[in-house]
Image 1 (tube, protein in one colour):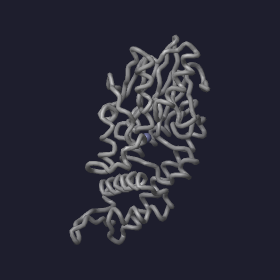
Image 2 (cartoon, protein in one colour):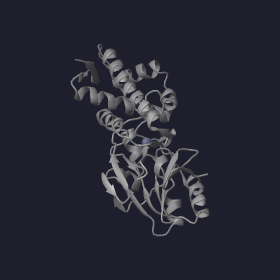
Image 3 (tube, protein in one colour):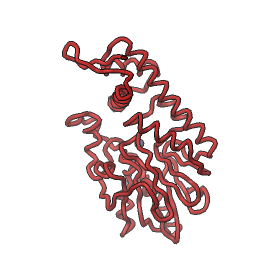
Length: 292
Ligand SMILES: [Zn+2]
């Protein structure tokens, strides 16, 4: 069932939220979900309402956000796909996601639909600013150039820009690409004043819930930064830091999650080096990190 938030703003949520903005008998989808089967559920519900999808806005290039594009495009002639620059490159070439996680020709374990959704065309690059009735807001950090979409109903489809406490408790150290950008985006969102926030993983949040979530996300990032700085008072490698953080937070570890986790650790190390807290150097032919 599509859930109406207010005005023209809806969402569908069972395996990750898809945002839906319906106006004058046509819909704009904000992301299309993990795969065709999932997108079909939303499209069927829209067809029951006599609504055609006229545009898709993809917030970022993670597989669970654009995997339903091909189904929607097949069933809605003339539908236009919008995505931010950089993100669109991966949407058009999903193999880049396992490549950047692995750093070379990726192992088969990384070529699943979570890392590599079905490729899709992108018709137009979308940028921060007005987009008809909608407002596009850059919230990069979790992904290279992620966007959130605000509607004239004062609803923000916030994608993966923050996570509710339940997800934070489950994953402990959520995926991010750039710590500084993530913190900037979280601080920017903390100053917003939407009535509702829709999270891909977490669903509908009231303003009060969202503000609390955002604060918890900021606190967790600061806590991880402090842990790494403390741990690196003695030099160690990336793998050493990963092992320490994985044990400290009892992180969920599979082969796939390992590559996400090591990527997260590298993002933290980049940030801490950039702000002058740690340094890297070669030792015994291996790259090491140490607090300054
Ligand atoms: Zn994501």
